[in-house]
Image (cartoon, rainbow, N blue to C red; front, side, top):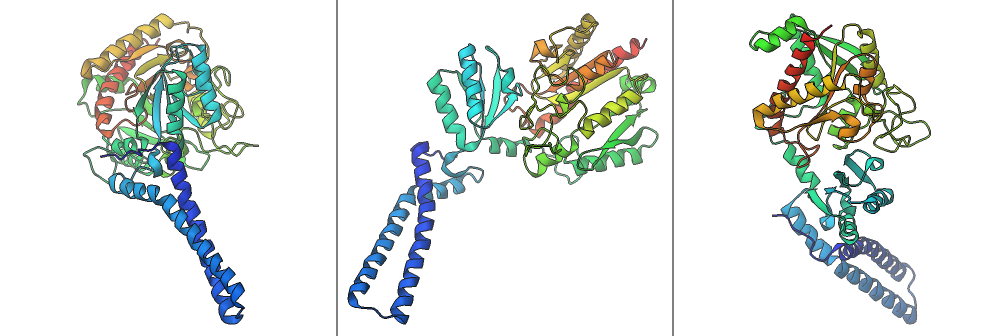
Amino acid sequence: MEYQWPFGNCLCKLASAGISFNLYASVFLLTCLSIDRYLAIVHPVKSRIRRTMFVARITCIAIWLLAGVASLPVIIHRNIFFAENLNMTVCGFRQKVFRVIPQNDEQVEIIKSLASNMQVDFWQPDSVTLVRPKMQVDFRVEADKSFEVEDLLKESGVKYRVLIDNLQAALDAQFDSKVRTAGHSYEKYNNWETIAAWTADIAAQNPDLVSRSVIGETYEGRPMYLLKAVETYGKDTVMTTLLNSLDFYVLPVLNIDGYVYTWTNDRMWRKTRSKNAGSRCIGTDPNRNFDAGWCTLGASKSPCDSTYCGSAPESEKETKALADFIREHLSTIKAYLTIHSYSQLLLFPYSYAYKLPSNYEELNSIARAASEQLASLYNTEYTYGPGATTIYPAAGGSDDWAYDEGIKYSFTFELRDTGRYGFLLPESQIKPTCEETLLAVKYIANYVLEHLY
């Protein structure tokens, strides 16, 4: 059972303040009594002064008792909290994820005002600047602001839903896989050390099928491993045909430093970990850092924003390493697929502008058929189309950049789900997500194979 603070946010803060006051009063009392005792022994004084000191002692005790009484509600409340739910924070504050759909420009301004007055992490779209009327907006707020945000939404008449009522509980629930192994598993979330070891193992155990290379290193000095699959065991006839005719390059993680940080510090971190000159804010959004309409629509020039585009195109070591590899192999690369979450989307260029690609009809047809293949397994419905018009504009993406470099089959997958879990998809959904996505990937790869020239 989850305990709720029954008296509201203000009283909760007042009671919390009582604890702090109680601590200060206790220190003050001990100091008074110590000084009083020292003077009574070392410097005996007259009765009038002693009476004054006695009054001072009584005053100190009274202050201490009042502080204790003031803090009783939160002390009792905390005991209930920690017995019921160790993930909860004092006074019932917890991080929440809200979904709103502003109906007009006035309500859009309310959302923007909210973001300007407190720390708001936008999940969908990923920047407040992209919020428009009738758009579905998902955002996360810090624990101590959740009551305030909910009150503001109610008072302003903005319709909302609480998608995730307790973010910490949702984070814990992510790890629900029945697979319990210290090593790599395709059915659970693996940290970077496990992924790196897996890339070495799979290449060492299958040297005729898979090779591993390093295409660069991250800001913090981690090697960026790239796998090249050239053959398969032959169990899957479609994959056997594809791998006999095509080479598949797989970069398991692009933003490795950021990924490591999500395991050690902040599970919601999305940027790189590079330092920004003249700012205390860390990191750049790697998918705003490619030279495709760089830092225009849907990207921020502020280092403190989650969609910061960087100081220049390819300013990040990670994006430059990937771009350099693609440029070196441009004559042989026929398709580029990038995998993200969440929203259940299959997107193609453009995202940095509202224009359509020259082969729009072909890309749209491929996306439609691939989405149908994906849905054939578990009935997971995907929306497809150009990035800017299907969801929102986002300049500096790798898919747009690859397309402009001449790779005409360029797609972005936004995997499960549509918001129930958001970025916190449970491990139990990893396997079905991979199975259905692979059907779409196979379709695209087979189409490319049939249209190489």
